[in-house]
Amino acid sequence: MSFDAETLRYDAAGLLPVIAQEATTGEVLMLAWMNAEAVRRTLETGRVTYWSRSRQDFWIKGETSGHTQELVELRIDCDRDCLLAVVRQTGPACHTGRRSCFYTGINAGEELELLKPEV
Amino acid sequence: MSFDAETLRYDAAGLLPVIAQEATTGEVLMLAWMNAEAVRRTLETGRVTYWSRSRQDFWIKGETSGHTQELVELRIDCDRDCLLAVVRQTGPACHTGRRSCFYTGINAGEELELLKPEV
Image 1 (cartoon, chains in turn brown, red):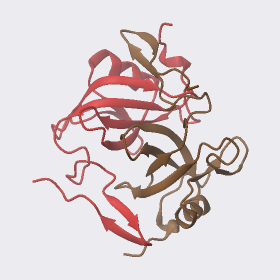
Image 2: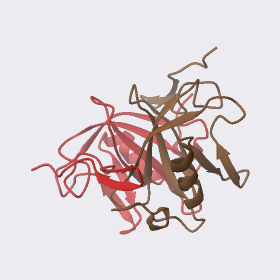
Image 3: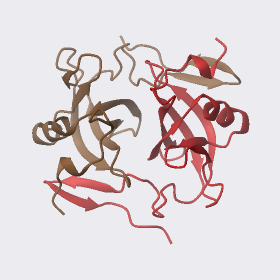
Image 4: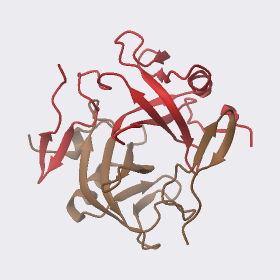
């Protein structure tokens, strides 16, 4: 079946959540949002392109930082309201300089820093 | 720092997205939603508990199907508006009987079934 970004289910703001996972290690890097046009641009360019909810603009991941995400495969979930972007991440995915945004664990009721910023 | 579920950032509906990842394989299984009480119940019971947006009720994963998610670790992202639940999944995570909800890939403009239902 031919893929059409319009057939995905977006929320009231026209967005759906996208999980970025590193292809080589399986590490979950971050979650961000796309609209239909961001989905199309990501597929066309092979450069993962989100919609920034704070800036209300397209956000080509790594365009300013150089920490790009090269798309390996985009996958759709059963409800068609969430995407999994399997990527090759250059440098840290998180704006804090950490490999993944999920660097805080909860252990016995305490928050624990699991990852340090990369140099 | 002591963890308090109220310090997470929820959307207008009081929810945040939660990614479930299989601890042993790193496979991304599904994305669902939690409110603060679901976060607390998940941590207290060790059984991953979502908020069902369609039923508007708590949803202890696998309560009816037996396809439970045992919590290994709950992680918070840098913006505190998304969680990663590292789990041990019993049986398929997807209601279609597939291991993961992300069983449809997009390849050269075509949708491709990547996973079949488990027996």
